[in-house]
Each structure stands twice: as C-alpha cells, then as structure tokens.
Length: 70
Image (cartoon, rainbow, N blue to C red; front, side, top):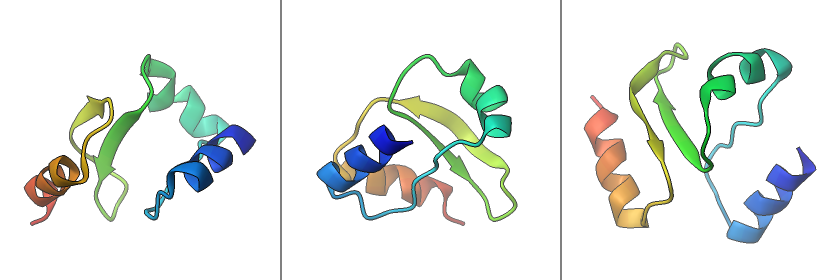
C-alpha cells in the first residue's frame, strides 16, 4: 500500500486510485499478471469493456475514457 501511495505522489496522478482490499486481491486482481493494468467500472462497480495493460499518454486515455462514457 505504501509503495502505491508513493507512486501516486511521485507521478502526480490526480484521479481516483484503487488500492486493493483482500477480497479484491483474491478476485480480479488475482488474475492480473502485468502492471499497470487498468479497468473501467460503471457507477455500480461493474467492469466496462476489456482491461488494458500498460501506460498511455493523456490523449490516449482521453480517447479510451470517451469510449466508455455514455
């Protein structure tokens, strides 16, 4: 958890971050082999689309986010 918080501070990430609980770690996060790994969820916590591996530029993230906003 401290490593994640340090990374967030060092990168200036100003968007919500998910720090996994044990339950989440045993669920979908147990299937993830790569970091960073991004998933989009709706207001009910349901995953939208496919997970994405790797970093993206701001413009690329804006494009991805726009695909999921309805």
